[in-house]
Amino acid sequence: MAKDKQERQVFIEDNQIISELFGKLDENIKIIEKELGVEIILREGKVIVIGDELSAELGERLIQKLVEIIKTQKKLTKQELRYTIQLILEGKEEKVKDLLNDVLCITASGKSIKPKTLGQKRYVDGIKNNDIVFGIGPAGTGKTYLAMAMAVNSFKNKEVNRIVLTRPAVEAGENLGFLPGDLQEKVDPYLRPIYDALFDILGFETYLKLMEKGLIEVAPLAYMRGRTLDSAYVILDEAQNTTNEQMKMFLTRLGFGSKAIITGDITQIDLPKGRSSGLVTVAEILSNIDGIDFTYLTKYDIVRHPLVQKIIEAYENYEKK
Image (cartoon, rainbow, N blue to C red; front, top):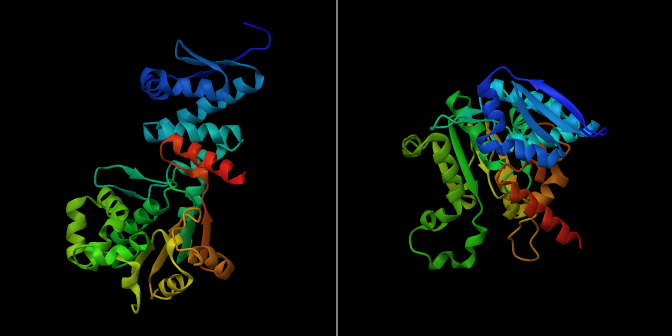
């Protein structure tokens, strides 16, 4: 071994932990080796990290944290692996434990929903501690899905009596009148992402029962005008496509015992030219009011395919030029 190379060892006595750590066909180890510039081998229950002084130390700390994750939840996903690498490189690995035990709810298929990044953790904590929360960030950061998980959990715990989900149907534009069916049927395609998340969290049959009883309502934003929403968990999705008037209208619907979560991506505004986004303006108006929280998620909070983060970075670089 060359003089500038060092070895760091982590002893793991459980073969199942080793198997989960290495992944199918050692795919996890290949990711670690590429990201940290190290070589990793397994010898007699010891994971050996070979690299220069800094890389070997980072590799050792990473392996220890990954073992901690596996011991806690019995598995390791690719997203968790990549995010833990990021935290290690930033010297924030002690924050990993904050993400391990904060389960928001269990889906119909038995999957645990929990924040997967520190940004998502801040977002969830903001929802727990405030009655109005704005989750602002790019696609794939879990803004709407986590809000729905919190809503379902609050409903199951009888903290609210119903869940109301809404979004503007800006994309439909003037063509709405030419589509068949009533207004609800016309805007349903624009509410589809909300339906999909609800099906995943609740299961289709439970969702239908709650819809039939009026305990869950999915409706276009136009349906909110003139109403007062008491004891409800209200989520406004795609809020970047609200006008200032629509945002004010929505926020003033909130009644006693209710909570509102507003999500959106201010880089994807579909409003006609000359119309200001209510989501952009509201941050200037309400940012200093107690009980209202603004959480800004970034590309580092994306929990979709790793390429999504790279795509967003590429667009950011292009727009800077």
